[in-house]
Image (cartoon, rainbow, N blue to C red):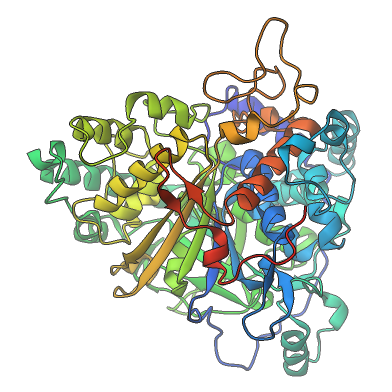
Length: 640
């Protein structure tokens, strides 16, 4: 649902979505209450901090991250300070999430049910214990339920038409339709109250109330008491409401010119094993951007305590030159959005998450732009402009950049897509890549050819972090701003290919750590170089060691077929698309079944449990040292 896709019938899809969401309730009002405190900061990471980067990818990503979060929640570790046994999630500082994964990240902290109910932590991590009945079971208090639940189309459509007939002015609220639909599907079933401010803790709330006596405690939503991990969501600014998409058209010119220059600077070394003298995309964009008003989609990183614009530069905003970033503020202070009859809508958790997931509003089509999120924000020149905000995946679909900007030492990235058209698409598997690029050693005489194939098949949202922008431009996306790791000969990407291929050959999950990645300056994200981080990448695939252990009666194969194929994928009609569930538009994603969502959950939690103490390659070599090593202590009382 929340990823950049080409709809089969785009205009029809958006038109129907508008009708379905016309039931949006009117907004509540609130007082203007600027804080007297110094501007907040997301701040620097603590030593050895752990952060999760949950990549986008629609409801498929939401389903995968649901399982991964459950897996870490089920693990018990020793707290380094207190010595007490706690969930591994208690040692995770942030869930940095984008697009579809913003759903589980927000719900993990703010759903009004217990964490055990939300993630169903009583479920097994042993695939041999999965049953048909358990695959069909989906409690209404679970995260899986809100992902899988089907809207009552006829009732919603009837109410939308009725509301329109009663008051035609409802059509003027079209920009809030996505927000309203998001609340109805993901928040209401888990008892999240509507239109509440939010913050990080009772202590922070007490400070806010002391400084702002017009506010009340009941105006705010807090994380559940047992939640120690904070939520960090990325949204992207796409220009002002009044610019008629001129901002994004100028960005397309920047992107086109930067790509032309990048390709012009490439040398024959691109086709050698050394990959020396890579063009520097950051320098290229910096040399071009001012000619086009520096109109680049801006990343905004938002936590419960801070709204932080990461972009640094002078930008043309309509007729004015404005310096960015503007001052940081707390979420309850950030901008305004007019509701019906001039009333103002609070920046609530549903607004926060719906902006991050609104891929429709991030396109340049006029009809789609009607559904973009709007906030009127004060700029550094003293003006206030109504800006358009939508899916954070325009800037970074991996969720890694906000954590690098914070300085997080240990980043664990979970991702479930490998789109690089026209070579690979959302339904391609790692088995498809392995067939054309299966080298597992630098000594392989065909390594160079295999590596070139691997790069052309891999997701450029990952390779761009290392300064490799692939052979095809990424249309309308700002990944040209995401070079953040020093890797002049892309040796670290070679390391990643070798590790992934070894694990795939051994039937293991694809989990690999790239240690001591050196961070370089990146002005688009306000990142200063010099630090080193450890990046663990979890590629959500279907390992044979999982599928071969699932009982056949839970995934009955077609007559005359084996339970799994040569790649380890189920042959059962319902499960053969797991984990590459269709993301071909909004409506395909609303057709996921409860058993499919549950299988995604089982797979995600198994990946964590199975790899806790490390993963071994086909020749007995250690490929991944294990999550237990990252979390500092081995699990205590492992018994599930």
